Length: 293
Image (cartoon, rainbow, N blue to C red; front, side, top):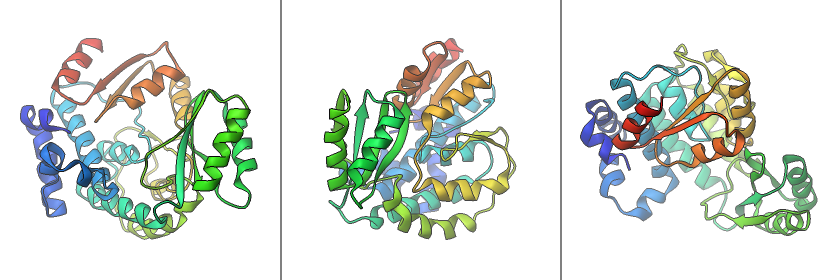
């Protein structure tokens, strides 16, 4: 992850080197050739994805692509968006998301929580199914990704019940996800409370361009509001569908996903097929994006 950018762009290489120095171990080596099991630990996954994403953005900058009108990130990606917008210092972000990953993993014992992707139902129907399935436990939408793709999270038993209920309500599929914890639901409150102190201790700079936050999908360029949004994000659903719809409503016609993978590009395509899409995770993607835009 990120090796191609590291090899081909000095600006990207500097980001990986800064992450290594900040964390006190070679995150870059873990990304490029490390053990897959180590990289999948959320305390490592979160700083790794943040670093690879910011490195990709710095490579984009070095090639002279225009600044974005808005930025947004899905869950962890919101930190990457805030770094490139100049609001959070990169080293501070790397330290914080490493703690965030640890806090999230510690919040719920293995096997207690679960997540599942529900395909083919609208938000209202999924919310009703989760409420029916809860039975005194936690079960709620965690990622509202597109009109017909919603991820739910909560106690394992309640998520299992919700999958059956939602299939009866017409879901095309209900797929249990292989995740280490039930993210973005009330079970994450212990992690949220621990992270709140770290976020309160950060310095937040002025926005180079505005962001749309996960918790409300609203446009923000007020640095004083960021700490609260990031704190609540831990246990709140990611409102990605509304985020993209609000961007399109503000006149955005081109979307570029920057960082590992193409998941968000696929979600944008599900939400609106009329806009232009591109993704940049390596030098080939960067060249293709320059041609596309």
